[in-house]
Image (cartoon, rainbow, N blue to C red; front, side):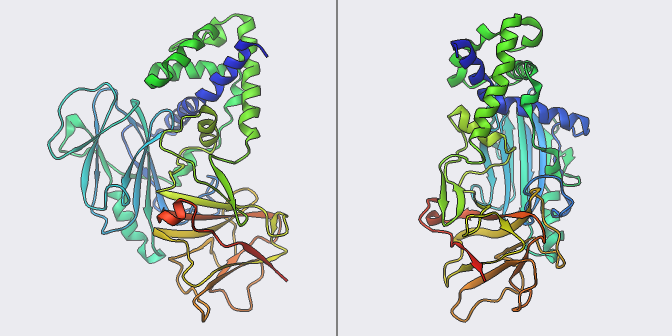
Amino acid sequence: MNDLNVLARDAYIWGIPLVQTRLYLQLAKELKLPFNQLFVSSDLSTPDSDVPLPNVDTLYGLGWLDLSNNPIIVSVPETDDRYYLIQLNDAYLNSFCYLGRRTTGTHACEYAIVGPNWTGSLPEHVIPITAPTNHVLVLTRVLVNTIDDLPLAQAVQNAFSLTDLSSYPTFTNPARPIDDAFNNFPILQPSKLGVHFFDELCAGLAENPPPVSDHNFVSSLEQLGIAAGKKPSQEASSKIQQILAQAAIDAHAIIHGRGGWLIDTRNVNGWMVSYGITSFIKDPLDRAVVAKLGPGCLVPEEGLYFSMLEGPDNKPLTGDKNYTLEFPAGGLPPVDAFWSLTLYNQDWALASNPIDRYAIGDRTEGLKFEPDGSLKIFIQHQQPTEGTFNWLPTPKEGWFHLFLRTYQPKQNLSNGSYAMPPLKLEG
């Protein structure tokens, strides 16, 4: 493989997050979701939700900001210690800022999201946050404690408001309801664009220039016809176009050759967990692997996820077997916010079941602990003889996937000291 082939492949890997941002923005335009407006889901996810791996713990929200002309001011209400998160992602899908219970508390506040080239003054009490790019993706989560708590959670997220600085102190864009907010982030297949992938990359470079640390690399791409505003599919030589088309195939294979494993992924008693997500991921391949899952991956300090596809018998988890997960007394996941164990079917969707239970966690009503203080969760298709209290129903056919979320994990969890207990195969 010659140098241009390698460079083209590296360009594809480096450019995945920026191209995905453009594709998401195009989808938002098609769905008539304008800039500088938050769209929030009014209900928790259900088996009908299209997004892969939805949680049933929080209400979701999203919005795209355009900071080209003015800062956008975000207003958040007092949440009375309720967990919420406003995650800000730049055009390269770096989660450059977290607003919420862990980082900024739960008091009412106003923040100004400022573009990289804006100069001016802000109202004294508004807290400035400088974005690396003019396009910013806002993702929100608001915890729902119980079904009866849903109206209070809705009230919190409905109080999220945006406004252009020129309209402040009037907030012109209160949050608007939308069905299944995260459905707007389907799994993308940018490799199918072929050489046109690099047209999208060039357009993205024009809209959202790269960080200074990547200027030398981006300049080296000019020999492939890749530069801000260019169209390699039309302007590059046929030889370069062939190199670019092949690079999309080769780079796609490299990214997917990593499977679903993210940075610093470890096997903890059969649970796969990544401890290496950071706000700014330096390695382009690591960043591409994270980006292919879609936006919203969290740093371990905010949320740590444990996933399991195979049981203790090293075979896929299936509904014809009975499993248990037992936390010893005093050994529940150590978190400052919440934890939950969710079950997904082989399509990565919530699995329908007769009791409409898709997850068990620290807010599940009626959980029964053993006399010694331990907690045993029954994961099986048939109702346990012990009753439904601790039952997480599995689908009758096909394999399933377990996903345990921990939000605001304590230090012994986020640093790997705490070990999640193993799943046990019963009978």
